[in-house]
Length: 106
Image (cartoon, rainbow, N blue to C red; front, side):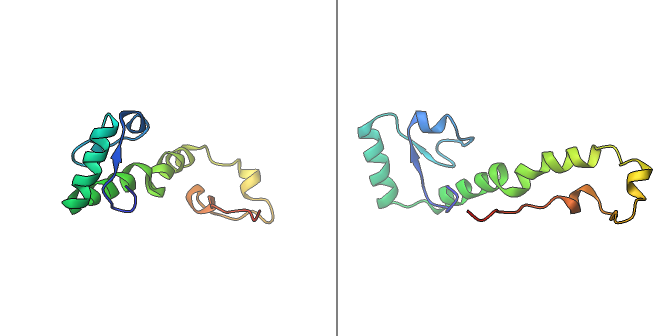
């Protein structure tokens, strides 16, 4: 889905995905239906299905969607006490600018 390609899933796989069968992915409940859906998707590609799948992934699972609740929470956090803000070495920054993602080397 994230690669804007047609995806065929089983009902079990769909349980963990917020997607609409038929418009964002194809649903097949048994082996014969799955094989048929894959053959149909290969024989008659539907670019719109892949684009809709990609849009769903970006909207529901992209960084902006996943970080929005955290940034909202940080924006609502009470300000630091004046003593902490005015201490030497304290930097003025909003919670959104102080939040950073880093990846530790393994």
